[in-house]
Amino acid sequence: MDSKRKAAALAMFKLLQRATAAAFTTGIVAALLLAKLLSDGVGVAAAAKPTLILYPVFVMFLLVTGVLSRMGWLRIGGVLRGTVDVEFYRTYDRGEEPEPLRQVTRHFINLFEMPVLFYVGVVIAYVTNQATFWLVGLAWSFVGLRLVHSYVHLGSNDVAKRLSAYVSSGLVLLVFWVSLFTQILRST
Image (cartoon, rainbow, N blue to C red; front, side, top):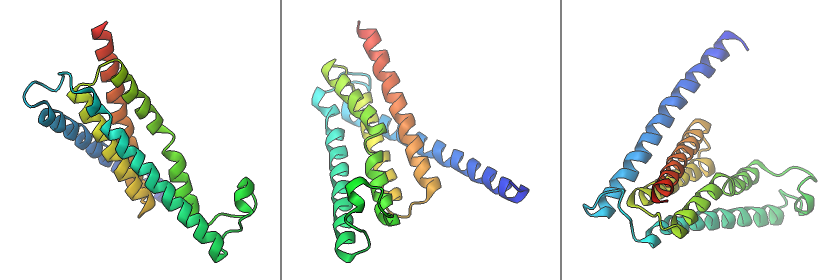
C-alpha cells in the first residue's frame, strides 16, 4: 500500500473511531435519560414493569418486517423487469444479483446476526424478572442504533457511518449483557 493510501486509511480509521465514540456515548446517554424518565424518580436501577423490556423487541420486529417487505418487492420487481433471472433464486448461485438487491439481502441477513443476542438478552431479563429501567433504556438505545444502521445501510450506504452505528449498537448490547449478568449475580 502506498503512503497516500495508507494515510487516507489511517485518517478514515481515526474518523471512524471518533464517530463510533460519539454514537456510543449518545446511545448510553439516551439510555440513561430514558431510564430516568421512565423510573419517575425511583432510580434507574429499580425494577421496571417487566413488559416494558418487550416493547423494543416489537420495534425490531417491525424493522425486520419492513426490510423483508422491501426485499420481496425488489426481488419480484427485478424478476418482472428481467433484471434478475428467477432461476437465480433457486440456489442463489446462477448468475448475478443486482447490487440494490444484494444490499437489501445482506441487510436482511444482518438482522439475524447481532440482534439475536439482543432478543436472547431481553428474554432472559424478562423471565428472570431482571427488567430494570436501565435495561429498558439500553434496549431502546440498541434498537435506535439499529434503526440508524438500517437507514444508512439501505440509504446512502456510507460505510463509515454504517460501521459506526453497527459498532455502537454492539457496544450498547455489551453494556446491556454486562448489566444483566451483574444484576443476576446480585440477585442470587
